[in-house]
Image (cartoon, rainbow, N blue to C red):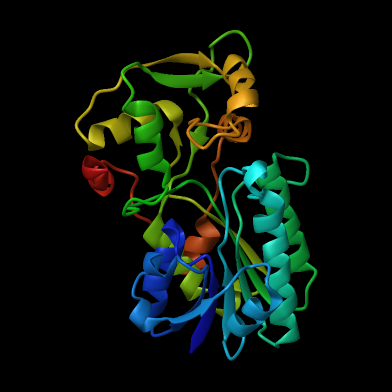
Length: 308
């Protein structure tokens, strides 16, 4: 069986490719010209060179396959470079949904995110619109909404290694973000980190699992952690004991208003907004339907940070 995969060269995508191969599928992957070396196990994949906004490229990928996975996404947009949430989270997904429907490929699996909503940040809003468009189609859809995803990224962008690089490795205390004036709740927002292999297992298992048709699954670990705990666990995993101090988000957002258009600036206004909202979820339905025992968010499972 062949599975069309969009977004197969990034952090999560590389694990989806591995899991597809492990389960006997042949990934059929759209690759931008010049990015072929980013694909894991290319000898076991069918590669289509092209662009997510080229109908012929999409049509070639979603041809003679049994399912489609849309996993393209960005955590920050750079409008000056034409890299936007609207293009990649919504328009790209819409293009693939339309062609899957036209080609009679009925199973469509979408990577969304926990906490998406219509009137949220740009990230949340366009993920929500992609979900809405897919649900209105005639396809057998499955939507996954992960909390933060961790795991060895082999140098690609990943939550824990990025946090280590941008905040924890710097020669001053880690920020305990808070909104408003008084730091009463500094760093108390929580998340449900889930390991990337667990995410990949759910995606691939949903291809043949009829229970997953017309279902939206939240994906998180089996325990919630607040920001203070996350900083402590990550720091411990590579042998550090990081101090942390309250940090008001208002002045950071004002600075980001000017600087978050540059990739070197560590955090965007949207990311700060979503961070303070928290990112916890109830994943019992996913655990049950996919017989999943999620990996712990622990120093042992974060040992890859020693070399990042």
